[in-house]
Length: 494
Image (cartoon, rainbow, N blue to C red; front, side, top):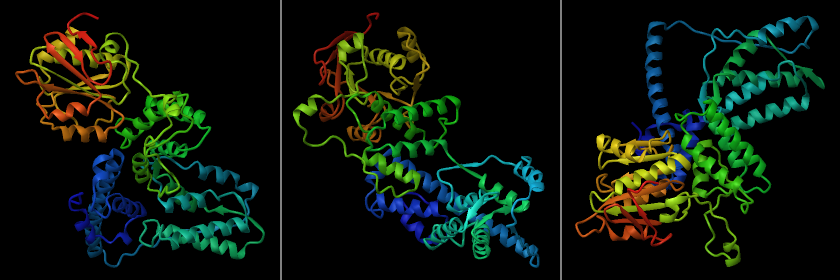
């Protein structure tokens, strides 16, 4: 089993020249972002980079295991049938299309779907299949000698650059295409109408339908294409609309391997399209690096942003627009209106109303501002939690409850941890959690000591935006950076 802790040891046993291009690119990406395995900070801090590497390792393990299995099967078959040889031959005919051939052409283009299988959804169509598809599309088309030459040159370039290798599972078809194109070029005059024999067309056409690019990947490519360009607001709106439509139709589901990236780019697109001051869509470098790994491209011409500049003119800064949540009513009175990626901590003695306060807040956010996860480690999924949900009447489709902290928080905009102490988390764990999910908001609930101070390192109080204390039963006081001194009666009806 190849994993992050043994990758560079196990990888020495693999000949990458025999692997498909996608694995070679995955290996190059892993080496680049980890500095040859010497620094895994990017892997640990970036969701996109971590997911890309994890998927690469999973597929690499699957490929290696399948190869071992197929080698054993092939060896057994050769032992049983040592004299049996299979030879496959395909041909091409370059005669111009005749009028009486039209019915045949129609029948072979309408290939029977009896043997069709659902295509495999992939991040990138292999280079070989791109050329096979391009060759199939020549059927019935009139092409000049220059156009045929360009095709031959681009194919040979891919072979020379080893983007197509002899070990490819499509090597037979690629060799056939190359030989036939050269033959056509050497014998044709100024122009020719290409016509493939029915069996050739059917075989190659079927190959091109075996793999299809994930819809999420197509959206990510378009998103990256908007980066750093002016006048892209309308295109960004259309992209956001199409993503939402695909999710509504089920074309992109929660099981999509890149659903977390889709949620993140949706937020960025929404902020960009609704922000009057923001003229250019900007993608941070860590995010861009992760997306680069997903697409398997170099993308070196794309420059992400590091964040806000270290020095800004005060007039420019004063005119900047920051996206806030839009809190109203008692929550605005208590907290103010923080940004969508705020962090808050709530602490107080037992039985004072901390959980009631936070469950009420979770319900409000679920009803008005997004998807919420409430991790109730303190009480678990039991009758007590159910009563609090019912008392505050906060049950909602956008509010999930859990007794554990799940591995992925991709689906959620707001996460409540009740309590940090029961979950066994230290300030360093909370900071890493926030760094891994920079666009999400967190509410950390702490147990308190007998004298009313929260359990944990005092430095953590300075790392959050909002600090809410419950000093006495039913009363909450905001003592953080925003709206200091804001108060709320916890058990009072809204």
